[in-house]
Length: 288
Image 1 (cartoon, one colour):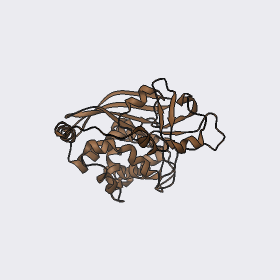
Image 2 (image 1 turned 30 degrees about the horizontal axis):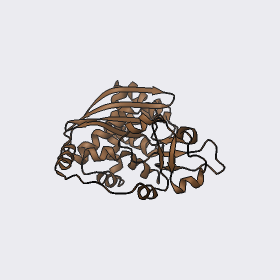
Image 3 (image 1 turned 120 degrees about the horizontal axis):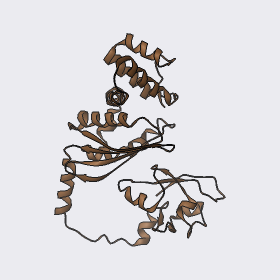
Image 4 (image 1 turned 60 degrees about the horizontal axis):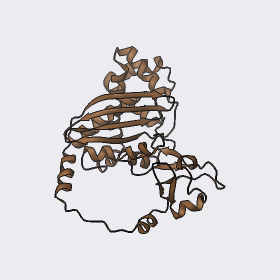
């Protein structure tokens, strides 16, 4: 975990309880550092120990404390110019939510050891949407909820009520399904545009489309690879006709590599795959 997140947590406690109480909590949580270097990494359990120590000192629930940490993180990072990235991520809240994976991909240029979560939406209506949150971490669901609520208020002047539908924590990490209730005007606008926009056939030959994506993979419900992009074929020349999940490993998003799961992830703009089961070349990341 990067020091940026932990320093934001310290700042949240300092703002709410003062330096004296913060020091007591730091000692109780057995944290040696008085401050954190933002681009340095620290053990994952530090944040959980800190939240538990706050709970013991104040009587607050750990989930509420994590929500507050997430809420404050948005304000804290805005002091360092990160608000610019959030502002340009979308015209409205739905655009922001659907661009979260792209945001984390961009952040990895500055934080290369980042373990990015994955988000995708479904069942969208004018009153909100269903959001899937997946992460290799455990215990950060309410932290994410706080971040979403703060972004909605701070940048889109929108109140969001979040209803937890399902939380599954396993050895693989966390998969949370939450229902976001908010005034989803962006969805209504796009829906109206689709209704009034005249339909016209997009006359592009298959070969032209496939050539435009040299790292593409086409596979069917049987998971058998039909075609590969020219550049990708140079790396795995004998992959055509084999099961895609026998040749490639899914890296992102953290979903089961099945046909239905890939189709279900409707808002995923790219699927990163790495290492091949049998390949003469050095394992290389590719994308579809």
